[in-house]
Length: 150
Image (cartoon, rainbow, N blue to C red; front, top):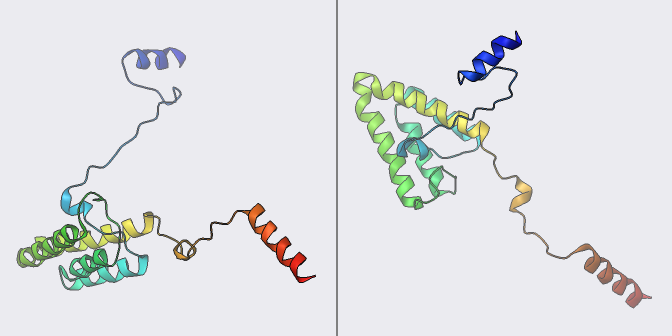
C-alpha cells in the first residue's frame, strides 16, 4: 500500500494520505456577479416570482441593489449593477418564448436563494450606532458621577 502511494506521488497525483488541499474558485460572469445578496425571505419571493413570471423576480431583485444589497461587483456603481439586473430580467423575458428564458429565470432565482443562504447578512445590532468610550474611561465617568452625587 505504501509503495502504491509513493508511486502515485512520484507521478504527480496526490494520494489521500498526503494532505494536499485543493481550492476551487468559481469565476462568475458580469450578469451572474450582479445578483444581489438579499435577505432570505426576499430571495424566496424572487424565486417564486421567477418561477411563474420569467424575469419578474430578477426585476424585483434589481431594486434591492438600490436599497443597499451587496453584490460581487464592488467596483461597479450601484446604478450600473441595477441596470445589469434589469438587463438580465429583460433577457429572461425575451427568451421565455422559447423556454430558455423561463429555465434561466428559475435557475437565476435558485442562485438568489443560494446566495442569500450563504452570504453573511449584517445583524441588526451592527446597524446601531456604536459608542467609542473605552471601559476605563467609562468607569472614570461613573466614578465622577458617584463622587459628585455624594
